[in-house]
Image (cartoon, rainbow, N blue to C red; front, side, top):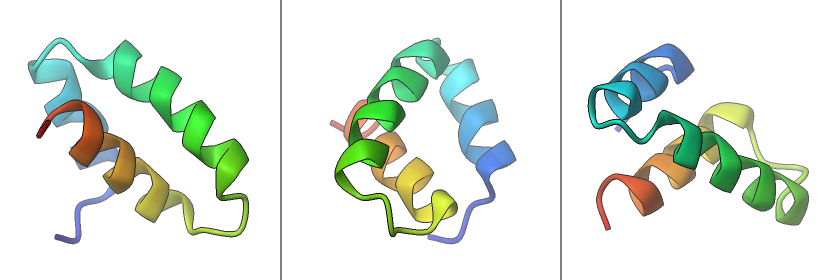
Length: 51
């Protein structure tokens, strides 16, 4: 899935999970500092929205 950061945030907002996604994003960013930001947002989205 190749969503943009904006797409991910908008969809999370529609699910009322934007703040939760951003909080989780900070955790996984610290553990994966070398990953692309878009990939990190997608990982956070998959964990928060799809789980």
